[in-house]
Length: 239
Image (cartoon, rainbow, N blue to C red; front, side, top):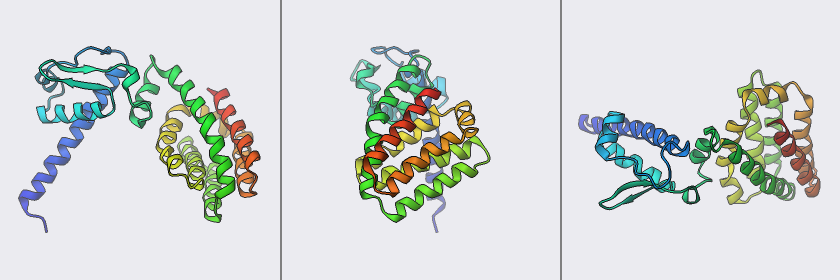
């Protein structure tokens, strides 16, 4: 059983983590939106402490996180400045989310994202058709059934997401699997309620996913690639 002082320390640490998450998100969105331009200083620590009503420790932790994402750089005796877009870790799910939420970056981020998916997801489907196991097929079938029976847009999205992640897992390629987090962010941000509702009323959407699944299950790599490309083109057309 933990001592009282240990529990207090854990509570304090958890409280601090929640605060720096808020600061990271606020500063990240501010920078990505262009409100704080590249090359600009984000302001003295004390000013940020006053703005967010938190401690210097929280501000420093938030700056450290944003620096790890390539967004900020701390310069001794000069302050902390905003880095140019070319330095940002654009595959970081949180950075991607901020870009997709930003009017300044939304259009370009969506286009970049579609082009990325158009290159690697058809290849993933092809690889899954060569390497997938019965367990992989079962996960895909479960996701398809969930999409068909879903009662709201959020459920559709979660099952759609599970379908794509099952394909990435079925490749057996750990780098493809690592892109699962990116795809999760992409689908959640790009598939708006309107898009999901449009597709839910159209059996064509389910059939597109079904075509991909059947080609994978029947070990038809080239067909799986083609069907995945068709599916992604439909996604692009809906945006």
